[in-house]
Image (cartoon, rainbow, N blue to C red; front, side, top):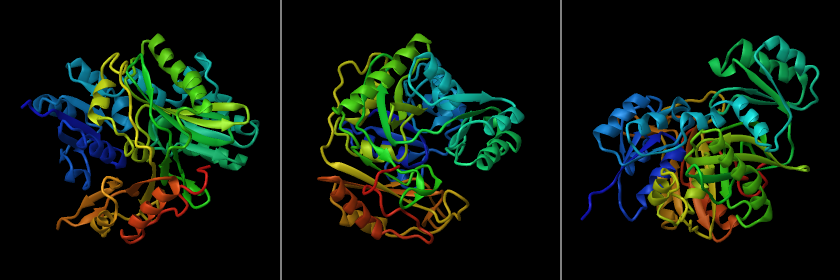
Length: 431
């Protein structure tokens, strides 16, 4: 019998739990590690007490454990160059190099890349001086969008419907430096209107393979009102992969992006995520992510029938996707996020969570998952909240309504003080 492969997943959220759970379904039954992981991941993998941003320590661990494949979940290690570091030591790793990760790490780099490769996007201006940016705010048509250039944990984008809000955003980012050096420069752009679609594709640097589509819900409250969050839920599919609109996006955005990165000698292997607004003038690029989206991943990977480990391995090798075909569960998936009270603002941690086992028992086998995001254990071993988004309850169903009903039924069994979720996931458009 051949030796089991060793896989390291980097990260600690719902996306990483989904990846771990997917890999655990692999027929090859790999040995799975996760750094640092969370309380739910601990049930399916060996958690390692190393921060996802401590890339040198992660390298040491991967070398010492003879890890066969590392899969990077969050963006910060990618932007910091973990892929270049690992590949420099001959270690296989899923994700783009530091150069390609700039698509997410710098909104200004992203915009300039879009312009160089004639990929449609909103009109914009770049500022490294707050006074110039504030002057521009008084001239640009409303509404407008103010963005911190660097990584800001999903909070560095402010949609301003009045000039006072836009000016406050500039001051917050550039003067008060709420996001540190990520706010050294800002981008101010026109506000696009329409419906958003998330298109994710695997790429090996040359070939690309689209994943099933999904839509996620950013606003905190029903009816798409309230502050933006990291995502309060998702469903898949949104459009079918064969839809002419999706094919047009793949050709005009994904293909041109993969080709453009190759032309600029920016190696990009892993997941290319395109956030796109469907406007009256056609699809327009909003942003790239250099990794799986969250909580779209919960809905998408739960539907993947092809051996997940084989998929990740193929996308980690130049040319590895050339002959790969993905098989999908035809059922719909819906993911509902159970968040801490107060999220995305301040919230308490360490609140006991109950009912997860009951939720699983009442769900259909292989059609219901409770993915942990912000969870931990207290000194007594009790499961407690440890973040803003706590759980992602994800169910499959014959159609979206059936999947939604199963997910909400499972959510009814789960409890913690202050639990907040939207009740309209899967019934209304996400925007």
